[in-house]
Length: 386
Image 1 (cartoon, one colour):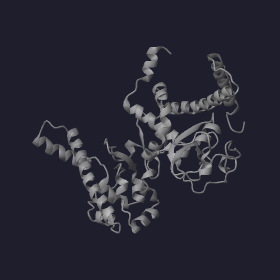
Image 2 (cartoon, rainbow, N blue to C red; image 1 turned 45 degrees about the vertical axis):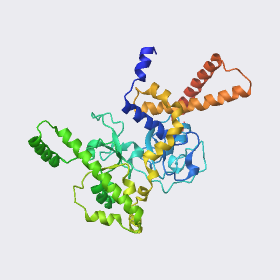
Image 3 (cartoon, helix red, strand yellow; image 1 turned 120 degrees about the horizontal axis):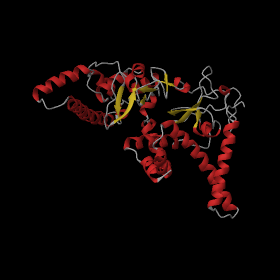
Image 4 (tube, helix red, strand yellow; image 1 turned 180 degrees about the horizontal axis):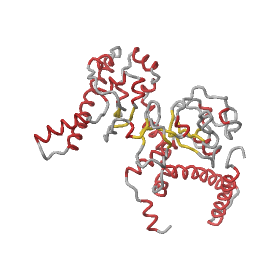
């Protein structure tokens, strides 16, 4: 690769850099070498599905990062991002005779694991595969923080909001399964103007100031919403601190405006701290299977922040080298990079113990042998039963 091509590969906008950094944080937050099974149902970890081992007519199953790297190397792997309260399935009875290389002794089934169509490579209410070659719309997907399914923005019945404080989304199905959340959405969610409101605001604005665009109107509405949210946040936070027996939910419910409740809801980063902590409400969260909403460390932001210190040592180099690739290709390179890093460390340690000088020739021989071993492994592990 010449210098010009190398420079072109290193050029990426900040948005692409942030997205790729999140992918590194997602992987760095999980152990790449040791099966996570012994840790039980982890609060959050990166999860993968092996399409080679688990066919569409079989029960869904997922594996941890380490098993994806070591047990399923060379298989058709789907990245599921992160899942909460998941225990690694690799080698259990769902894999029909396949044995985990890292931890063979496992229960037959992890009864507390929750699965959805993501484990078969399908997403969203449209139940389509990702990547979808037939989809002409190149659109990012957004994950619901409750069901953890991924949705196309166009299928949320509510346009995504471009807002600095926006962090989380809950799909309409999950909102209806925990209907008390609609009350909180009236006060703390970030929502764009609906079409009728936008048209009315546009007409009124044109009367007063013809030079102001509809985009300015929408921007103003977001600013007002954010100011209002901050004000109400200060009020409820103070109430939490001064009177823990007080039911904030009942007080907010009295103020319900019964807005449209047929679309996904977008939330700012602070919204979980506004949930009422009284005994009755805590019971309500458990009954709706959403007690994790009270745990602010449950968020993806908290998970990624925890992972960032571990991932900063190699991020800059990897970002500059693979920025032009798509997400699937980037992850594939990360997996191979982990293999190379592990074997290189072992090679250098052995060379040090034997008192050998690490010359360019020896490094070149190591890389050639590594490539040969990789090819042999891929050809012999085309399928786990071969």
